[in-house]
Length: 589
Ligand code: ARG
Image (tube, rainbow, N blue to C red):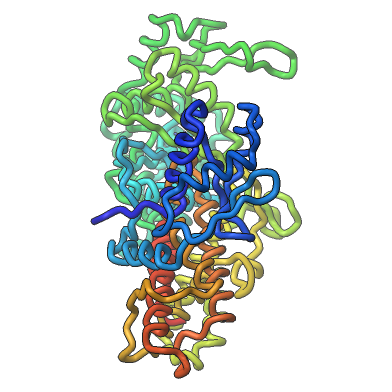
């Protein structure tokens, strides 16, 4: 395993050194290097620096140019305009650095972060006895991508699925089941998500009707909550039944999503029950929380209601019950002190941002979070329908995730089938690819816009072959694999002595950016930047195909080998990038 520094970072370093040598009083100045259309790179930092130090920018630029080591990396450098540097790299440097990446297996030269720590990611957190909705899909998809990306950069990642499995509503459900034994469950032993959900729905509806119409049942339900919180074995056993039934359903949805969720990582709200009392005691003793109208509250200067009165975070209700906040604060203690996390990441709907702002601030006041242990909400926006309103069925009910995924797969299968004959796919391959294309389309649509923005759920657009879609990327990958199969005896091999065509240089320089993009994505929790990078990569590949023949009899053998080498590295980069986003890349499509 050998990490490969990017050409941009090597050049950046050389320029910074040359700047310091040419102008010692500049200290460590940033040459502000970026990719450019006129040359490979442009450095714009000299201008501001010269102005600051009252020098002549063009003179300084010329001095920097003279000081730069010539030859291996830089082919050409020219001072342009008021003092910019246009820099062109040697073809050899590009091919050699790509060869080093290609020699580094799955890591493709991407370094493992030196100061990696432990991040706990809270994602994919549906609620027991309730249908999952598109928000839960977003959390799962974005969270899973962040897990893969952070692990790839060397971070230790602990996954936590903070499912809603506790609270007063269970009093009603359990009491109903207690009075109507055997109503939860379904025929046939096979675990079937749909059957599990419909059985949960049945019990939910029936108990709700009773709860709303029968005062005595209501009272018995309340007592049942107390029994649940006190750990009464019979009550707990019935509660466990709801959790188990819900898990059958959750797993069936995650399975459809082609996503691995592990049982040990499901630590729902109930998992922190034993800590709630102590959490509240600590908060009260340290003065972080105060009694107000019988409740235990935390106040904030900048959180006020419409009437101007402060809105507190309630950690313990007037009736002695604990809510969502007490659980989240206990979970923070557990993750920081028990799991030894230094970063806590919450992939949760933006509509819960105020809750997390208050919870994090409370935890900071209590000392659980500090400079070394930080918490972030990776907040995501709402999924909208084509009409721009929150995504609902035509009847106005929430869309069932299973139906939505099934439809995506169905549409994708039709798209795959259209080309199947030409590619020679078997029926089995059509079905498998249809699934990977359909699920990939849903994931990619979710991941390719900045998470915090709302986005429109539009299946037609998602499975389109043109444009910024996962299918487009999957086809780019499959096309390369097909070329590699057709190449027969010609094998990919780097030839640094060859001159590169403009489209080859552009593709190569983009490939070289993979590691830099990944570290930016991991640092800022922005998977959409990885999606954008991969889309650009596929676009560079398209231009390359337009301008450069790979398997042409007119090409000398070295050119064929070098081009095979370029496209093979592109395929591997696409594959790895898509894998990190949780999307498969079929070999033949
Ligand atoms: N179950 C919650 C919901 O469906 C999301 C939980 C988010 N995580 C947390 N630690 N509060 O909205």
